[in-house]
Image (cartoon, rainbow, N blue to C red):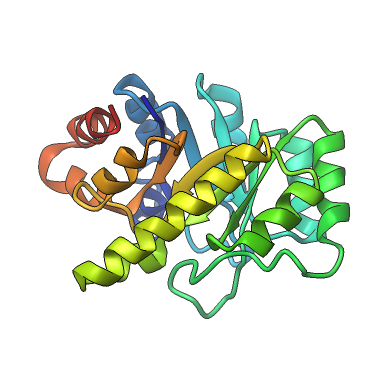
Length: 235
């Protein structure tokens, strides 16, 4: 069975809408853990639009599975990661004007390898969120990444069956390349209770990071059921 990382950013989004104290992201993390989540994923953005520094500190102290910190590959975030020591850091691209992450990380960006080395030297597992492109995967391997998270946003947005199948094939080829390089195969972005199934059937993806769809369903069913249902699909 593939592992499930539950992204709880949007619990914090609701809280920050009124700059109040509820709902509490930590409570969401604990419910997710109790109902099958193998890790908790949060994105500490530069503009702090949802997850706050206090959330990160609380998560590190309390959650019992794994903490995956998504963050930009910049000096500020590396310092924070080294002070908090999440189990995993996933390096992602970040723009203030975007609603959500719009694509994969450019592995050719300046000083990226140095940031990866610095995080690894602190004992943190490093993953990169990239497009299913061979050249990007080869650079991830060259830079010593422990894992690659395949950006599935393009796949999730497609409607045409032929194009969907072509993208699934592209993701499968990427997964094989990642695995052959000895890195963990992860996938995420835009995945829901319907489109995740064809990717599960590939049989190569070891972990899925899913957030928006789970939090959306939880409004109607409760978070425990939403997490549990997604975990069952991964089996």
